[in-house]
Length: 362
Image (cartoon, rainbow, N blue to C red; front, side):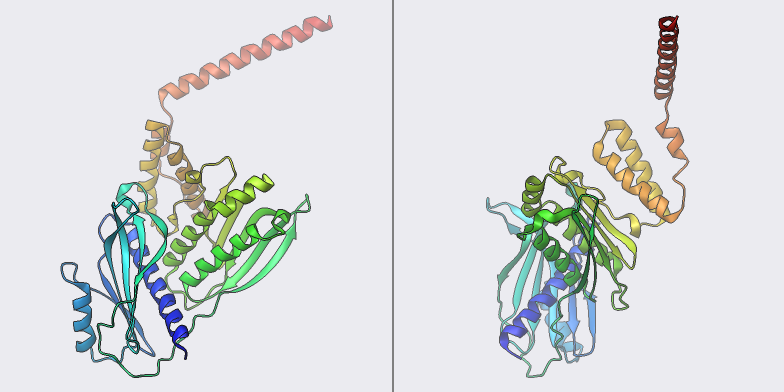
């Protein structure tokens, strides 16, 4: 196998582990617990590392004490990088090594943590360098899966205006490759020379795959991919050119993972379904519902109202009712009085209008 193929495989593997780190970090206020990914020709395992010690030094000890024929070792931890103004920015940092190569790979992804308001990736993955191998160099033949691209099967449906909606199914066993494929697929459609023929509807269905164990990770990556597409410059140019909106839905095994829509006049931050409530249990759903309801009523918060709409969809999907506190919180005496006033006023106006019509006919 060529050196380029080995390097490409290591980068693909490193991105997958990096995405695992982002997923572990996205829904918590605490720093990521460092972890190590250990791969042999037949097995893959992830182990957490102590947070108060050097993750690289700990990884060296594990690699020698385990007495396993590891082919790849990837260490992931949280740190920081600097932006163009020299400010510190949180980042997930990955050190990836193929133990048959003298040089490894270091990549990172900047992000805004949840406790700043909303978890969000900043920019794209950055390659920081090719560090020297910190483990014993091995001479082996690694059975490397080059992670073939996701397979697409696309159907085009025409609407009443003779515009095309894209319906596609795809399959793969790696969530990182699936999400990247979705991004590239939609952006290619929006930027090609015949992009005016599309109506902006993209329906994506990921086929069930027994090798896909972590559906939460798949949902996280696909949601991020779709939101990035929706907010991209390519989408802005297409919407400006066609005066149409973009609406993307993504399912796994016919179950909704994420949905987002945007028109040129809709701010990016007001995308539909920025939250993924499918992973919540009923107690968590009810707690989120009460919190959003109070926030929406207290501050007339539009974003909270949109989240409530998404949350309501999840309740309906499960066939369960919302908390009873909704009626107590949502309907107050001021609203009732206003409603009664509007009804009485409308009734008076209606009778006056009918009386006028009667007199005109006489």
